Image: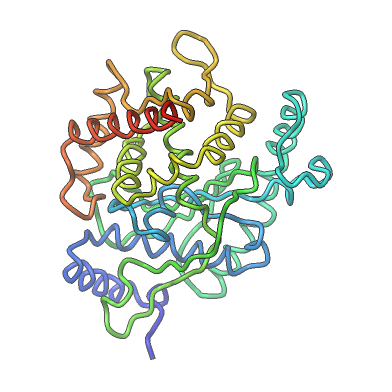
Length: 340
C-alpha cells in the first residue's frame, strides 16, 4: 500500500522529490510546493464549505485545465457572495448590486465578514487537518489571505517561497464553474508514494481569460505595475490562446460583458491620466494587452526572473515574442467585436 507523501520522514520526502525531479525533469522545490497546493485544495473542497467555493486563477489553468506550462504556486478562491452576506443579496441570483451605493454597502460588509470567515472557518479546517495527519506546517492569516508555511526540503533561487498563499474573494458567485479533478505533478512518478488529489469546483477557463485580459488592460492604461510576480498573466493569456480557449471567450460577448460589468461595479480603477477605466471598452473592441514605457521594462525583468527559477516546464518563448502574441490576441479580439 502506498504511503502518503506528507507523512513520510523528511529524509524519505527528499528522496522522493529527487526521484520525481529526475524522472519529470522538473525542479524539486516546485514539485514540493505543488504537493502543498493540492493538499490545501483537497482539504477545503473535501469539507462542508466546498459547495460554496470556486477555484480560479492561474493555478486552476495549470492544475485543472492543463493549458499553461508554468508552475502556479498560489491558490485563488472565491467564496460565493450569496453565502457570505445572504441578508444583503436578497435572493438575487446574479449577485450584482443595483447601484453604486448598494455596491459600497455590499463591499463594506464583505471586507468586514471575509477576514472573520477566513479566521473562523478556513483556519480551523486546515489546522485540524494538519493535526489529524501529523504533518509539519504553520498557518498565518493576513486579512483575506491565509498562508501555509511549510518546512521546505528542496531549494530554489528564492523566487518561489516555501509558503502557499490561499487568497479568498467574495464579491461574486465564481460562476460559471464545474468540478474537475486535480493531481500533484509528481503523482505516479515515485513508486509506493501517494500524493494528494482533489476535485474542486473550477471557474471555466473562458471566464478566466477575460478576468486576466481585463486585469492586463488596467495595467497597460495605468502605465505602472503594482507588486511583483505579475508576468504570469501575460504567459497565461498566450497559453489560453494557444489552447483555443481565448478564441471561444472572445466570441462569447455575453461572458465578456458580464466580466466587464462586474469589474466596473466592484473593481473601479483609474488610468494614468486619472480618468476612470472603461472595462466595457476592453471587451468591446478596445482591449490593450501590451504595456509601454518603463512598465514594459519592469515586466520584462519579472519575466526573466520567472524563467530563471524554472517556473516554465517547457522552453520559454522570448519576451518580445510573448508581447507580439499578446498584441495579436488584442488585435483579434478587437477586430472580432468590430466585425459584428
